[in-house]
Image 1 (cartoon, protein in one colour):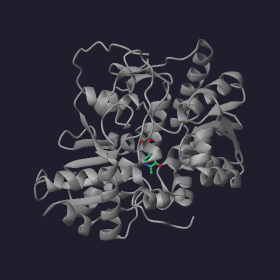
Image 2 (cartoon, rainbow, N blue to C red; image 1 turned 90 degrees about the vertical axis):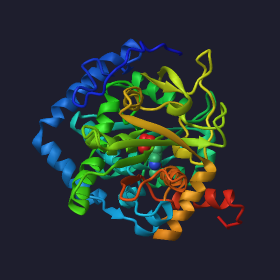
Image 3 (cartoon, rainbow, N blue to C red; image 1 turned 180 degrees about the vertical axis):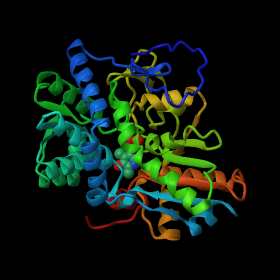
Amino acid sequence: MQMQTQHKTIAYEHHHYPDERGRFGNFGGKFVPESLMTPLAELEAAYLDSLKDEAFQEQLRQLLHHYVGRATPLYYAPRFSAMVAPGVKIYLKREDLAHTGAHKINNALGQALLAKRMGKKRIIAETGAGQHGVASATACAMLGLECIVYMGEVDIERQSLNVFRMKLLGAEVRAVSSGSRTLKDAINEAIRDWVTNVETTFYLIGSAIGPHPYPRIVRDYQAVIGQEARQQIIEQEGRLPDIVMACVGGGSNAIGIFYPFADAPSVQLIGVEAGGVSLQPGQHAATLVAGTPGVLHGTLTYLLQNEDGQILDTQSISAGLDYPGVGPEHSYLKETGRATYVSASDTMTLHGLQALSQSEGIIPALEPAHALGYLLEIGAQGKLAAGTVIILNLSGRGDKDVLTVAKALNVQVQA
Ligand SMILES: *Cc1c(COP(=O)(O)O)cnc(C)c1O
């Protein structure tokens, strides 16, 4: 659905969003069937209540430490920094070292604990690349919850290893055969399940998307990344960074690292989207760079759509960034100018992945490799002054992507 936003100029206000209607400026809200209004209100009440429950917060902190392995390191990458530009200092926030190899577990664990506190023992989730399905199945196994993951038939085929991982972890994977048989269809199916089974079921959303209060809940569970990074950079550099960067799919790792820095005007926030093959319609997933506002999956936000409001196909070397929408808080950060959004092509991304692997001995996931590739590009253009301090959120490790990379580089590997 295409929507005109009011186009009044809005200023970024740190502590007021989302407001009581779940809006981030002109974006966000709850565009859902009547039957979901009460469950969403119950979820919001339970979430706000959990913030005041000291025992709950302590249990979450303990699990993030002993099970997930937090705090993750903030690593100064000297050899990669030298490849980008002389005198620039790049720090990597090592979410790749979290349990299951990416940031998604922070949110999956938080929401699964919240479900348990609400007395809901049946968890549903949806997944495209399979990473959120694996994080949800992991959290559910550890907490003894039933886990059902909706996944498009096309994705099941493309991501068979992650399907098997979920099954090993005790989850049930349900194939979705409607529409394009990918992530957006799996989300529609999960919403349908939630409407039908709302009494017993908790819908565990995997990125900072969906109707209010999900974008806020996911942001808050991921904000641990930025809170740690802010403290760590003060310890190591004695000051705030000049730039904080992250890749943006649905936007959860980016909002998690941006939010705790957003009240500091000297810190520039840069989100890097998937530029795919080109910025022609259907050849990328750069929603904020090339999209327009509209409603998808319960929220008003930037989308990739045509003039009739039909959702466009997306394309990216990285399955995890391949979503035609984006979290509404990022639309707000774009519209207020508080953050800047750019894109990196598949080629730049491969370059970034190889450069970090060879200079630092860290094989990154393809998603954050977009931000690495973008840095190499602007460094080569002479746009980064000596002395610039940058934190880049290394959202995940690259083990899952090695076959994709080999194929892109025309290398034969035995699977
Ligand atoms: C899923 C994923 C992303 C994209 O999701 P966001 O919600 O935008 O963070 C980025 N990096 C990795 C490693 C992922 O697994």
